[in-house]
Image 1 (tube, rainbow, N blue to C red):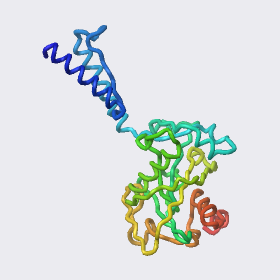
Image 2: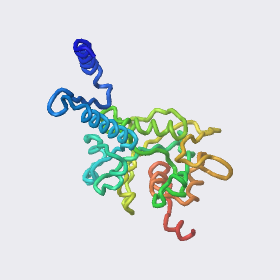
Image 3: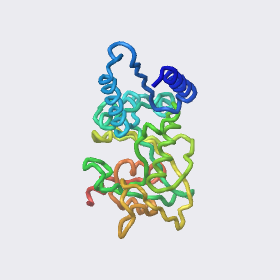
Image 4: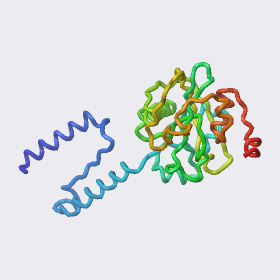
Length: 267
């Protein structure tokens, strides 16, 4: 390569980065004509290959959002969340961090009269055996906040972006998330629950004769006698064995009390 061609090439790259750098996930510059890299193509190849492999691994490993457990100590948690910035880390590291709490955006799909709701069940093959959701009917859908949901430093805007994506992925519905304050649900009765904070939004739609199509491998498909993906009344849901988040939703959204002690005794 002639020197004038190389110089023109470098100028073009600099101009592109100056104009469009905000659209690149990461830019790494390696000066090959300085220090011990000059005249050492093998070392340059090693550095480039190592960097490419590192980035490929980071692309494959899911990054999820989390906050510090200290935030939960604030008396007005909702106001505190509006003021903080969501942090992100590799999922396997965040899951093991006892000082990290994962905000989980969830949606209750109900109607305007609040006498019906969509229920789902997690796929047993993809659900951890220690998960409170395992083998339970859930009165909500949702999931973790991913790094790509974070298009702004606004905590709740990022939460809403994540929830919109989750609804699209799980039931193939594109809905707008109401910007009103969500319901916060936090239970600390086991180690797993202590590391998750539900941020619950109410999504109202006409559920009369509505047929939902489950499009996520994480949920049980609607078939046979399975109730996953069906519309039920809150009172019908009460007859099921439920986990804590759905119990809180029955109370705070549908004003229905669920006696978990009586249910466990009956079972």
